Image (cartoon, rainbow, N blue to C red; front, side, top):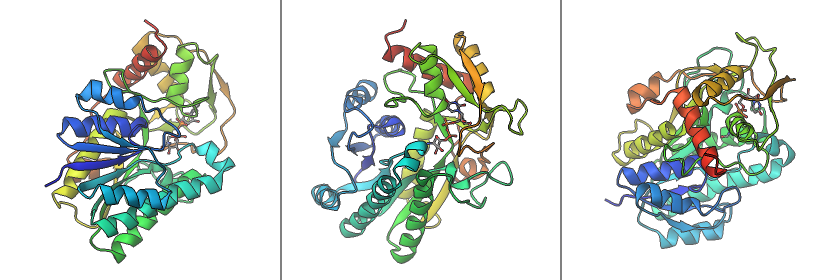
Length: 342
Ligand code: WQD
Protein backbone atom coordinates (compact mmCIF):
# COMPACT_ATOMS: atom_id res chain seq x y z
CA UNK A 1 0.00 0.00 0.00
CA UNK A 2 1.28 3.44 -0.90
CA UNK A 3 2.49 5.52 2.03
CA UNK A 4 2.63 8.74 0.02
CA UNK A 5 0.94 11.59 1.86
CA UNK A 6 0.04 14.95 0.33
CA UNK A 7 0.61 17.75 2.85
CA UNK A 8 -0.84 21.04 1.65
CA UNK A 9 0.68 24.04 3.41
CA UNK A 10 3.64 21.82 4.31
CA UNK A 11 6.18 24.67 4.46
CA UNK A 12 4.07 26.44 7.10
CA UNK A 13 4.36 26.29 10.87
CA UNK A 14 2.25 23.24 11.76
CA UNK A 15 2.66 21.72 8.30
CA UNK A 16 6.47 21.58 8.45
CA UNK A 17 6.46 20.01 11.92
CA UNK A 18 3.95 17.44 10.67
CA UNK A 19 6.11 16.57 7.62
CA UNK A 20 9.00 15.82 10.03
CA UNK A 21 6.79 13.49 12.09
CA UNK A 22 5.45 11.79 8.94
CA UNK A 23 9.02 11.15 7.77
CA UNK A 24 9.96 9.81 11.19
CA UNK A 25 6.96 7.46 10.96
CA UNK A 26 8.17 6.13 7.58
CA UNK A 27 5.79 7.97 5.26
CA UNK A 28 6.74 9.52 1.92
CA UNK A 29 5.57 13.13 1.65
CA UNK A 30 4.77 15.52 -1.18
CA UNK A 31 4.21 19.15 -0.18
CA UNK A 32 2.06 21.63 -2.08
CA UNK A 33 2.34 25.24 -0.95
CA UNK A 34 1.95 28.61 -2.66
CA UNK A 35 4.68 30.10 -0.39
CA UNK A 36 2.43 33.12 0.27
CA UNK A 37 3.18 32.90 4.00
CA UNK A 38 6.22 30.62 4.26
CA UNK A 39 9.70 30.02 2.84
CA UNK A 40 10.84 27.19 0.56
CA UNK A 41 14.02 26.99 2.70
CA UNK A 42 11.92 25.09 5.26
CA UNK A 43 12.24 22.01 3.00
CA UNK A 44 16.01 21.94 3.59
CA UNK A 45 15.47 22.21 7.34
CA UNK A 46 13.00 19.30 7.19
CA UNK A 47 15.70 17.28 5.40
CA UNK A 48 18.32 18.32 7.99
CA UNK A 49 16.04 17.12 10.80
CA UNK A 50 14.52 13.98 9.28
CA UNK A 51 17.10 12.96 6.67
CA UNK A 52 14.54 13.21 3.87
CA UNK A 53 13.44 16.10 1.69
CA UNK A 54 9.79 15.98 0.64
CA UNK A 55 8.81 16.39 -3.00
CA UNK A 56 7.48 19.89 -3.54
CA UNK A 57 5.19 21.75 -5.94
CA UNK A 58 4.32 25.42 -5.71
CA UNK A 59 0.80 26.46 -6.60
CA UNK A 60 -2.41 27.69 -4.96
CA UNK A 61 -5.06 25.01 -4.43
CA UNK A 62 -7.82 27.50 -5.18
CA UNK A 63 -6.71 27.05 -8.81
CA UNK A 64 -8.86 24.10 -9.96
CA UNK A 65 -6.89 23.38 -13.14
CA UNK A 66 -3.52 23.24 -11.33
CA UNK A 67 -4.98 21.14 -8.54
CA UNK A 68 -6.49 18.65 -10.99
CA UNK A 69 -3.24 18.48 -12.97
CA UNK A 70 -1.34 17.73 -9.74
CA UNK A 71 -3.64 14.86 -8.80
CA UNK A 72 -3.55 13.51 -12.37
CA UNK A 73 0.24 13.29 -12.10
CA UNK A 74 0.22 11.91 -8.55
CA UNK A 75 -2.27 9.04 -8.54
CA UNK A 76 -0.46 7.12 -5.78
CA UNK A 77 -1.47 9.45 -2.93
CA UNK A 78 -2.77 7.42 0.03
CA UNK A 79 -4.03 10.37 2.09
CA UNK A 80 -4.10 14.16 2.35
CA UNK A 81 -3.43 16.49 5.27
CA UNK A 82 -4.85 19.88 4.35
CA UNK A 83 -3.21 22.79 6.17
CA UNK A 84 -3.01 25.33 3.33
CA UNK A 85 -5.20 28.32 4.20
CA UNK A 86 -5.03 32.00 5.04
CA UNK A 87 -5.04 32.16 8.84
CA UNK A 88 -4.68 35.69 10.20
CA UNK A 89 -7.80 36.57 12.18
CA UNK A 90 -7.38 40.34 11.89
CA UNK A 91 -6.44 40.24 8.19
CA UNK A 92 -9.57 38.18 7.48
CA UNK A 93 -11.74 41.05 8.74
CA UNK A 94 -10.03 43.37 6.24
CA UNK A 95 -10.08 40.87 3.34
CA UNK A 96 -13.14 38.59 3.74
CA UNK A 97 -13.47 37.68 0.05
CA UNK A 98 -9.83 36.61 -0.16
CA UNK A 99 -10.35 34.40 2.91
CA UNK A 100 -13.59 32.82 1.69
CA UNK A 101 -12.20 32.22 -1.79
CA UNK A 102 -8.83 30.87 -0.68
CA UNK A 103 -9.98 28.75 2.25
CA UNK A 104 -13.24 27.38 0.86
CA UNK A 105 -12.41 26.91 -2.85
CA UNK A 106 -9.14 25.13 -1.99
CA UNK A 107 -10.97 22.51 0.06
CA UNK A 108 -13.67 22.04 -2.58
CA UNK A 109 -11.04 21.57 -5.32
CA UNK A 110 -9.33 18.94 -3.18
CA UNK A 111 -12.60 17.10 -2.56
CA UNK A 112 -13.41 17.15 -6.29
CA UNK A 113 -10.02 15.59 -7.02
CA UNK A 114 -10.41 13.04 -4.23
CA UNK A 115 -13.57 11.79 -5.88
CA UNK A 116 -12.13 11.90 -9.40
CA UNK A 117 -8.83 10.20 -8.55
CA UNK A 118 -10.01 7.90 -5.73
CA UNK A 119 -8.17 9.43 -2.80
CA UNK A 120 -10.42 8.58 0.13
CA UNK A 121 -8.53 9.89 3.14
CA UNK A 122 -8.41 13.52 4.29
CA UNK A 123 -7.31 15.11 7.57
CA UNK A 124 -8.47 18.72 7.83
CA UNK A 125 -6.89 21.49 9.89
CA UNK A 126 -9.69 23.03 11.90
CA UNK A 127 -9.65 25.25 14.98
CA UNK A 128 -11.19 25.73 18.42
CA UNK A 129 -12.27 29.09 17.06
CA UNK A 130 -15.44 27.30 15.87
CA UNK A 131 -16.58 27.20 19.52
CA UNK A 132 -16.53 30.99 19.88
CA UNK A 133 -16.82 31.83 23.60
CA UNK A 134 -18.19 28.56 25.02
CA UNK A 135 -20.95 28.70 27.63
CA UNK A 136 -19.37 25.79 29.48
CA UNK A 137 -15.71 24.82 29.98
CA UNK A 138 -13.82 22.68 29.18
CA UNK A 139 -15.13 22.18 25.63
CA UNK A 140 -15.78 18.71 24.26
CA UNK A 141 -16.29 17.80 20.58
CA UNK A 142 -20.03 18.00 21.29
CA UNK A 143 -19.92 21.54 22.60
CA UNK A 144 -22.12 23.54 20.23
CA UNK A 145 -20.24 25.61 17.67
CA UNK A 146 -20.97 29.32 17.70
CA UNK A 147 -20.95 32.10 15.15
CA UNK A 148 -17.33 32.86 14.41
CA UNK A 149 -15.82 36.16 15.52
CA UNK A 150 -14.04 36.58 12.16
CA UNK A 151 -14.24 35.53 8.49
CA UNK A 152 -11.20 33.32 9.21
CA UNK A 153 -13.07 31.50 11.95
CA UNK A 154 -16.13 31.23 9.74
CA UNK A 155 -14.12 29.57 6.96
CA UNK A 156 -13.14 26.87 9.45
CA UNK A 157 -16.75 26.34 10.43
CA UNK A 158 -18.01 26.30 6.83
CA UNK A 159 -15.21 23.93 5.80
CA UNK A 160 -16.31 21.54 8.53
CA UNK A 161 -19.86 21.70 7.13
CA UNK A 162 -18.52 21.07 3.61
CA UNK A 163 -16.78 17.95 4.87
CA UNK A 164 -19.81 16.75 6.80
CA UNK A 165 -22.17 17.21 3.86
CA UNK A 166 -19.69 15.76 1.35
CA UNK A 167 -19.19 12.47 3.19
CA UNK A 168 -22.98 12.11 3.45
CA UNK A 169 -23.24 12.45 -0.33
CA UNK A 170 -20.03 10.64 -1.23
CA UNK A 171 -19.57 7.71 1.21
CA UNK A 172 -16.22 6.77 -0.31
CA UNK A 173 -14.69 9.80 1.46
CA UNK A 174 -13.19 9.31 4.96
CA UNK A 175 -12.32 12.52 6.80
CA UNK A 176 -11.12 13.76 10.19
CA UNK A 177 -11.28 17.40 11.33
CA UNK A 178 -8.70 18.27 14.00
CA UNK A 179 -9.69 21.30 16.08
CA UNK A 180 -6.43 22.87 17.25
CA UNK A 181 -6.35 24.99 20.33
CA UNK A 182 -3.38 27.37 20.47
CA UNK A 183 -0.29 25.87 18.81
CA UNK A 184 3.01 27.21 20.23
CA UNK A 185 6.70 26.30 20.44
CA UNK A 186 9.17 24.88 17.94
CA UNK A 187 10.99 21.68 17.05
CA UNK A 188 13.69 20.84 19.66
CA UNK A 189 16.35 21.21 16.93
CA UNK A 190 15.37 24.92 16.65
CA UNK A 191 15.64 24.43 12.86
CA UNK A 192 11.92 24.99 12.25
CA UNK A 193 9.39 27.06 14.14
CA UNK A 194 6.77 29.78 13.84
CA UNK A 195 7.88 32.42 11.32
CA UNK A 196 5.21 35.10 11.14
CA UNK A 197 5.68 37.57 8.30
CA UNK A 198 5.49 41.16 9.55
CA UNK A 199 4.21 42.04 13.02
CA UNK A 200 3.19 38.83 14.84
CA UNK A 201 -0.53 38.58 15.63
CA UNK A 202 -0.11 35.62 17.96
CA UNK A 203 1.09 35.88 21.54
CA UNK A 204 4.14 33.62 21.68
CA UNK A 205 5.97 34.87 18.58
CA UNK A 206 5.38 38.42 19.84
CA UNK A 207 6.87 37.40 23.19
CA UNK A 208 9.96 35.80 21.63
CA UNK A 209 10.50 38.78 19.31
CA UNK A 210 10.20 41.14 22.29
CA UNK A 211 12.74 39.03 24.19
CA UNK A 212 15.03 39.16 21.13
CA UNK A 213 14.75 42.94 20.95
CA UNK A 214 12.95 42.82 17.60
CA UNK A 215 9.84 44.34 19.26
CA UNK A 216 10.03 47.12 21.83
CA UNK A 217 7.32 45.93 24.19
CA UNK A 218 4.61 43.30 24.46
CA UNK A 219 1.05 44.57 24.84
CA UNK A 220 -1.13 42.39 27.03
CA UNK A 221 -4.61 42.78 25.61
CA UNK A 222 -6.75 43.28 28.69
CA UNK A 223 -6.56 42.41 32.37
CA UNK A 224 -10.25 42.96 33.13
CA UNK A 225 -11.54 39.54 32.11
CA UNK A 226 -13.35 37.28 34.56
CA UNK A 227 -10.22 35.16 35.17
CA UNK A 228 -7.92 34.78 38.22
CA UNK A 229 -5.41 37.42 37.07
CA UNK A 230 -7.76 39.26 34.68
CA UNK A 231 -5.98 38.26 31.47
CA UNK A 232 -7.53 35.92 28.91
CA UNK A 233 -7.11 32.17 29.09
CA UNK A 234 -6.20 29.77 26.26
CA UNK A 235 -5.13 26.12 25.88
CA UNK A 236 -1.57 26.30 24.50
CA UNK A 237 -0.40 23.08 22.84
CA UNK A 238 3.15 22.19 21.78
CA UNK A 239 3.41 22.12 17.98
CA UNK A 240 5.32 18.78 17.99
CA UNK A 241 2.57 17.15 20.07
CA UNK A 242 0.09 18.59 17.58
CA UNK A 243 2.10 17.26 14.61
CA UNK A 244 2.18 13.77 16.11
CA UNK A 245 -1.62 13.80 16.37
CA UNK A 246 -1.78 14.18 12.58
CA UNK A 247 0.25 10.99 12.08
CA UNK A 248 -2.17 9.21 14.42
CA UNK A 249 -5.17 10.57 12.49
CA UNK A 250 -3.75 9.60 9.08
CA UNK A 251 -2.94 6.10 10.35
CA UNK A 252 -6.48 5.76 11.74
CA UNK A 253 -7.89 6.44 8.26
CA UNK A 254 -5.38 4.26 6.41
CA UNK A 255 -6.22 1.38 8.74
CA UNK A 256 -9.97 2.02 8.34
CA UNK A 257 -10.39 2.50 12.08
CA UNK A 258 -12.57 5.58 11.73
CA UNK A 259 -16.12 5.05 12.97
CA UNK A 260 -17.81 7.48 10.57
CA UNK A 261 -16.81 9.31 7.40
CA UNK A 262 -16.49 12.61 9.27
CA UNK A 263 -14.85 12.57 12.72
CA UNK A 264 -13.88 15.56 14.88
CA UNK A 265 -11.19 15.69 17.59
CA UNK A 266 -10.11 18.48 19.95
CA UNK A 267 -6.32 18.81 20.05
CA UNK A 268 -5.42 20.63 23.24
CA UNK A 269 -3.68 19.92 26.52
CA UNK A 270 -6.75 20.27 28.75
CA UNK A 271 -4.98 23.06 30.67
CA UNK A 272 -5.89 26.74 30.40
CA UNK A 273 -3.23 29.39 30.97
CA UNK A 274 -3.70 33.16 31.08
CA UNK A 275 -1.62 35.61 29.07
CA UNK A 276 0.18 36.75 32.23
CA UNK A 277 0.89 33.13 33.16
CA UNK A 278 2.46 32.67 29.72
CA UNK A 279 4.55 35.81 30.25
CA UNK A 280 5.69 34.61 33.68
CA UNK A 281 6.26 31.08 32.38
CA UNK A 282 8.46 32.42 29.58
CA UNK A 283 10.53 34.51 32.01
CA UNK A 284 10.95 31.49 34.33
CA UNK A 285 11.84 29.08 31.52
CA UNK A 286 14.31 31.38 29.77
CA UNK A 287 15.60 33.74 32.47
CA UNK A 288 14.72 36.62 30.12
CA UNK A 289 12.77 39.52 31.62
CA UNK A 290 9.94 40.66 29.34
CA UNK A 291 9.02 44.30 28.80
CA UNK A 292 5.23 44.42 28.68
CA UNK A 293 2.30 46.69 29.42
CA UNK A 294 -1.40 46.12 29.95
CA UNK A 295 -3.58 47.70 27.23
CA UNK A 296 -7.31 47.45 26.46
CA UNK A 297 -8.81 44.21 25.17
CA UNK A 298 -8.34 43.27 21.47
CA UNK A 299 -11.57 43.31 19.46
CA UNK A 300 -12.83 39.81 18.66
CA UNK A 301 -10.94 38.06 21.46
CA UNK A 302 -12.84 35.58 23.58
CA UNK A 303 -12.31 35.47 27.34
CA UNK A 304 -11.38 31.87 28.03
CA UNK A 305 -11.29 28.44 26.41
CA UNK A 306 -9.58 25.12 27.07
CA UNK A 307 -10.19 21.59 25.84
CA UNK A 308 -11.66 18.46 27.32
CA UNK A 309 -9.18 16.05 25.70
CA UNK A 310 -10.84 12.81 26.84
CA UNK A 311 -12.16 11.80 23.42
CA UNK A 312 -8.84 12.32 21.60
CA UNK A 313 -6.95 10.61 24.44
CA UNK A 314 -9.20 7.55 24.45
CA UNK A 315 -10.30 7.26 20.81
CA UNK A 316 -7.05 8.31 19.13
CA UNK A 317 -4.76 7.06 21.88
CA UNK A 318 -2.99 10.42 21.64
CA UNK A 319 -2.14 12.86 24.43
CA UNK A 320 -0.14 16.11 24.54
CA UNK A 321 3.10 15.29 26.37
CA UNK A 322 5.22 18.46 26.49
CA UNK A 323 4.88 20.93 29.32
CA UNK A 324 4.45 24.68 29.07
CA UNK A 325 7.94 25.78 30.14
CA UNK A 326 9.67 23.24 27.85
CA UNK A 327 7.48 24.52 25.03
CA UNK A 328 8.15 28.21 25.73
CA UNK A 329 11.89 27.48 25.91
CA UNK A 330 11.69 25.74 22.51
CA UNK A 331 10.09 28.90 21.06
CA UNK A 332 12.88 31.00 22.54
CA UNK A 333 15.63 28.66 21.22
CA UNK A 334 14.07 28.91 17.74
CA UNK A 335 13.98 32.74 17.93
CA UNK A 336 17.59 32.87 19.14
CA UNK A 337 18.78 30.69 16.27
CA UNK A 338 16.78 32.76 13.80
CA UNK A 339 18.40 36.00 15.07
CA UNK A 340 21.86 34.51 15.73
CA UNK A 341 21.54 35.24 19.43
CA UNK A 342 23.78 33.07 21.64
C1 WQD B 1 -3.78 34.46 22.49
C2 WQD B 1 -4.03 35.37 23.67
C3 WQD B 1 -4.72 37.58 23.04
C4 WQD B 1 -1.00 38.83 21.14
C5 WQD B 1 -5.91 32.73 17.09
C6 WQD B 1 -6.88 32.06 16.16
C7 WQD B 1 -6.66 30.56 16.19
C8 WQD B 1 -5.24 30.29 15.84
C9 WQD B 1 -4.35 30.93 16.90
C10 WQD B 1 -4.70 30.03 13.52
C11 WQD B 1 -5.27 36.24 23.50
C12 WQD B 1 -3.38 37.62 23.75
C13 WQD B 1 -1.97 38.08 21.79
C14 WQD B 1 -0.41 39.94 21.80
C15 WQD B 1 -1.80 39.51 23.71
N1 WQD B 1 -4.93 30.80 14.57
N2 WQD B 1 -2.35 38.42 23.05
N3 WQD B 1 -0.83 40.23 23.08
O1 WQD B 1 -6.46 34.77 19.24
O2 WQD B 1 -6.37 32.79 20.86
O3 WQD B 1 -6.20 32.37 18.41
O4 WQD B 1 -4.58 32.36 16.81
O5 WQD B 1 -4.74 28.84 13.40
O6 WQD B 1 -7.51 29.95 15.25
O7 WQD B 1 -8.20 32.32 16.61
O8 WQD B 1 -4.31 33.44 19.60
O9 WQD B 1 -1.99 34.09 20.09
O10 WQD B 1 -3.50 35.76 18.91
O11 WQD B 1 -3.85 35.27 21.32
O12 WQD B 1 -2.17 39.80 24.87
O13 WQD B 1 0.48 40.66 21.28
O14 WQD B 1 -2.93 36.28 23.78
O15 WQD B 1 -5.53 38.68 23.45
O16 WQD B 1 -5.88 36.41 24.76
P1 WQD B 1 -5.92 33.43 19.60
P2 WQD B 1 -3.35 34.67 19.91
